[in-house]
Length: 142
Image (cartoon, rainbow, N blue to C red):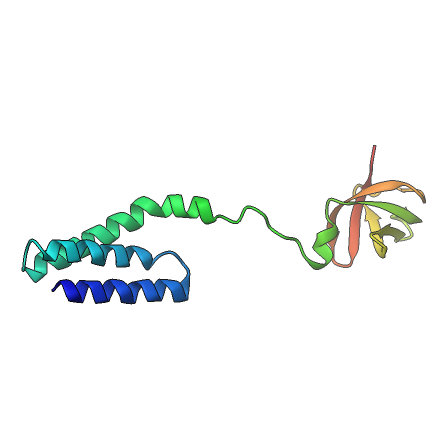
């Protein structure tokens, strides 16, 4: 039976390489543990039980560690949301009554409105708080 468990471990390992989810790998290790058990007992039920128990234990014991290592801490903002949190310069007065206002950030011109509906004069350095539709919500840097 050891050949069966070795082949099964190889199949699980190939599946892990294809899926890269680091989930099927533990079934491969469990099959190797069952292969070692097959040298001591010929009982297929005992070998299968060892495979299931070893795979399950390895999966649950190591999963938090694996998630911690492979965790993606950095979220890359793209498109319009990439300007959130950056500083800009007001090039047209931001006036909430007239609904006018523009800022320049990174060579791009954006329509803008103030964070708390106040007038922000031209040439003021501002912080882009968030994006609301096609307008940047800004507040002056103090």
